[in-house]
Length: 276
Image 1 (cartoon, rainbow, N blue to C red):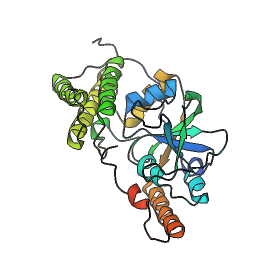
Image 2: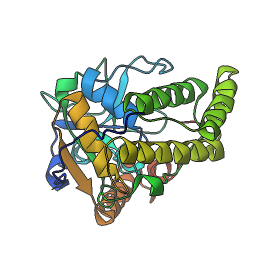
Image 3: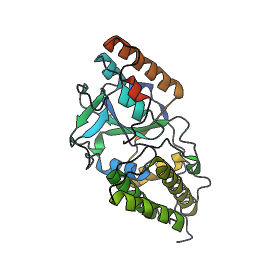
């Protein structure tokens, strides 16, 4: 690897509060699930296409909470995934798309055939995350379908290499074992996914230190690099724990009003899908 460091823009990302964009009925949301930086860069460049193992061959989006509530529905996929620790995309729509179906208990989801990259208005993540060192990133993990796990591992290994980094033998061995299970049709269990994420985040951190000259690089640092590589400048929004609590409380009230019970399908929004 070259000793020369790649020069990058040292200007700090300035996040915006998210109340206004969350309340915009013309904005829908797509959760990336955790800090999948390779997936983020690909979406910023190429837009969103249906997953190969998505049964209805559509891109899954969450409507804005206000739009769901005005339609008598809980914003439960928004709560469960958009407000989960990780990165989500704000998708601009020409007109409000009201949720009408029930997708596995999630009543605020909408479907599109694809999402053009130009429709991505911004990214959103928890308020604390931008300043979190990559080596301290630790999301809540869930079992991953074989094909999704395979794609996540392969694209992340390529992404680290594309950034000029190297992956150590221990991480490669861990990734290889996980890929073998995925190719055999086995789910990637939570513990294995957690170990792989930790190893990948260390590889990203080492890469940004060795190649870009950054000391103790953060989530905000790699976002700047990704935006530069993708040649885009999306707005960065952050949400707070208080906002999440307010949306959860509103969901409970909508469930009680709509279904005559205190919890309703909001129960689904407070737990992970074990096979997501």
